[in-house]
Image 1 (cartoon, rainbow, N blue to C red):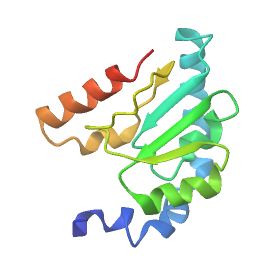
Image 2: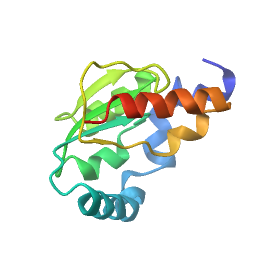
Image 3: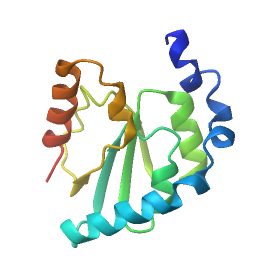
Image 4: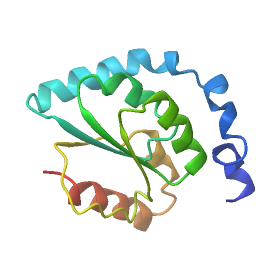
Length: 131
């Protein structure tokens, strides 16, 4: 992993101090409200690029979550915070789970799509996983 991404590798244990789970409460409430409006019967949710699982902490009460990320150390944080969720290592550009979800929720990890091709691949992955 590149030096610019050390935060998601050897420095990952610091994530909860830098970005506490409580900081996500307001935004997560709004995401849940919008998702309930557009998909009121949804039960399953895939979150590519889930990181340390802070959004999932609030969403898991409403949905059955599958969380994916490139960073094993970030997934380890999420596993501790969200043990009831499924966690899988994977790249949002190439993920192929061979199943569909009621919702695919892509949060700020989309910012790492540095090229139009990367972005198109991530959007195609999300579409491929939508029920």
